Amino acid sequence: MRIRVLFFGVLRDIVGLREDLVEIPDGGSVDSVFEYYAGRFPRLREMSASLVLALNQSFSEPSAPLSEGDEVAFLPPVSGGSAVFTQQIEDAAGHFFAITRDPIDSSALVHRLQRGEDGAVVTFEGIARNNTKGRPTRYLEYECYEAMAIKMMAQIGCEIAHALPIGRIGMIHRLGRIEIGEASVVVVAAAPHRKPAFEAALEGINRLKRLVPIWKKEYFADGEVWVDGEWDDSVIKARS
Image 1 (cartoon, rainbow, N blue to C red):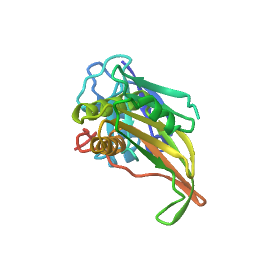
Image 2: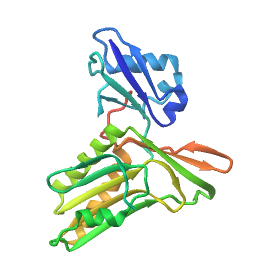
Image 3: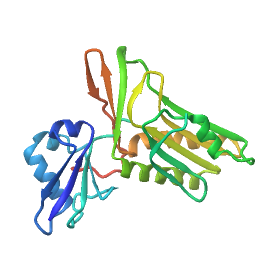
């Protein structure tokens, strides 16, 4: 059976491909795909304790069975004006999640979420800074597994909204080149009272950074590097 395979972040550099098609014998599993590429690229096996596998845009056990036409993604640890959204979800409760390649308008997201009953709106903006440990940064570049990322953002947001007494929550992440001083991510929480609004915004960015498949590359005057990150402990790794 033929399986579509996707590679992101530093794994794309290791394999030299963004995507590939591979023939797997009937009865094969997600782990069969891992073993095929780990045999060709030993660095993948070295990274297996931090590498995550996804099947059809959801985190997957290595033992999950495959069917013809399935999509398997290799995921390294996450790094953590009017926009055109390449992906977006807005549910019946008014929660909003989006991915864009344009500058993020935080005030527009606040306007979308805020209601008359809200006594607090908390906005978190993740901004590209001009250095990392004193090493001057020229700009950042983000990429992600878009179809899976938007689903995970919505799942995280709705779980937070269910757990805390807030009205609505929204998240927007930007992809592509980010200049110094520009926002790469915005989380907005609207609530009747300030404490849950602060808690929701903080929980939102913390979980986004550890669960959503988005990767950051930092460009310096003397080179560039994929920023090391870490998956949340709840995520199943390719190898324990």
